Length: 66
Image (cartoon, rainbow, N blue to C red; front, top):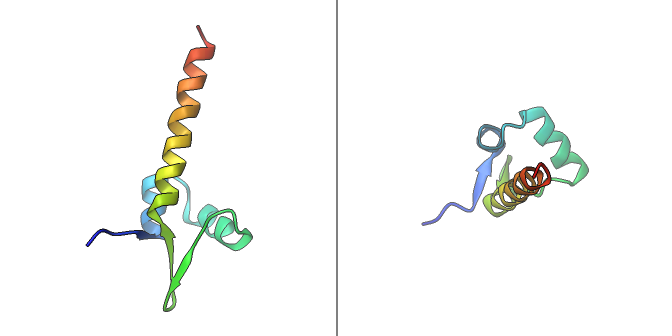
């Protein structure tokens, strides 16, 4: 079974964001979430999208230096 969600702690480790930053995003709606009982989970698809955007940004940034 494929994991589709990650804990806030796990997402912080993967993204490099602090847990506090992620919790602020969860509170203001900029970070998507689901609730599993008392636990909050972040969709892995959102984390993958974030990484895609970061890679594109790095690529654009390196092309601007040429």
